[in-house]
Length: 159
Image (cartoon, rainbow, N blue to C red):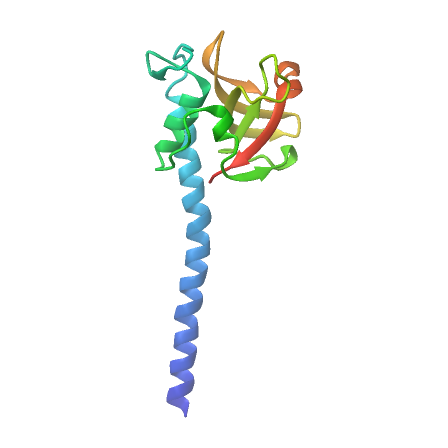
């Protein structure tokens, strides 16, 4: 009888350790992937904007997202409008580093034409994102700057 108790307690302990390690590993694994995505995107800082471009010679916003997420084996669609349909919908107040943000910067107020990746959440009014700007190339900006917050349409999470 005593042997069965020890065996059952040992099995429960092993199961508990496995379960707790698995949960902790999931968050750590996500954090590592987010860091890789952000570091990959930041490696393009200074790269000029080129509509339809996909290389370090010049690239557009959707190519930046494509390359950054591909670094963690997530293959996004190539166009920002299609990228905006992938993953979990996220509210502005729930943004985290690694989330994708989408904007309507063109003539049509609801057409997704621009995208970026959240790099830091410093406060409720200071959320940084990296993107390929037509005028600055790959750069980081504050989501709450008047230009971007007025054009913000949605956010998605794939990690």
